[in-house]
Length: 185
Image 1 (cartoon, rainbow, N blue to C red):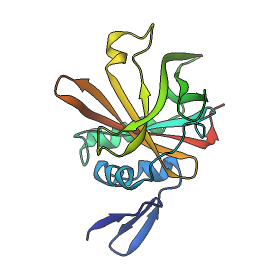
Image 2: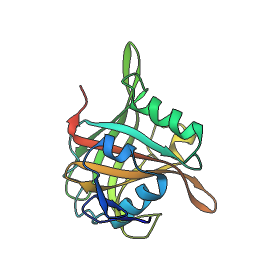
Image 3: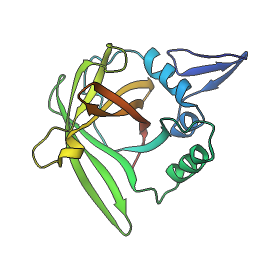
Image 4: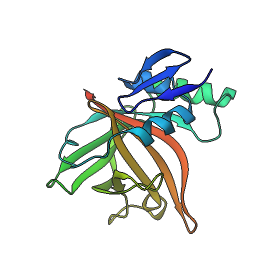
């Protein structure tokens, strides 16, 4: 049976609906379902809603759906000891904000790889998204080549693709999400 994803974060599988209201819900979805949910999410109007330290999770890596690697990656990403903890966000105004990634290398926690946020057309579908710009002073060249985007798919739950910038455009690498209703400790 087919799968349909509505803009309110509900995915319908053959008549039954799956609510995408948490990181755990999103982690149950395939890359195709995540892409559909992202494309159908409402366009953001301001970056001021992105303030805080939401918990983050890597959801799916391109090309691994249905493989043993897919299951292993999903399991590892759900563990408390997974190194990427999320992103911290601040707003400078309605059209620009700041952020940084939180990385845990137990017993330490680091804030690495700052970015700026702004609304601009998505590399995925051309519709507005919040773009996380890693081309910031101090970031290594390989971090500056990352293109992250996010859209809110449920209240406080933001989903996005992480992409690599290439000469031919952005290439999708993985899906991730941050949940402002679950701030990181």
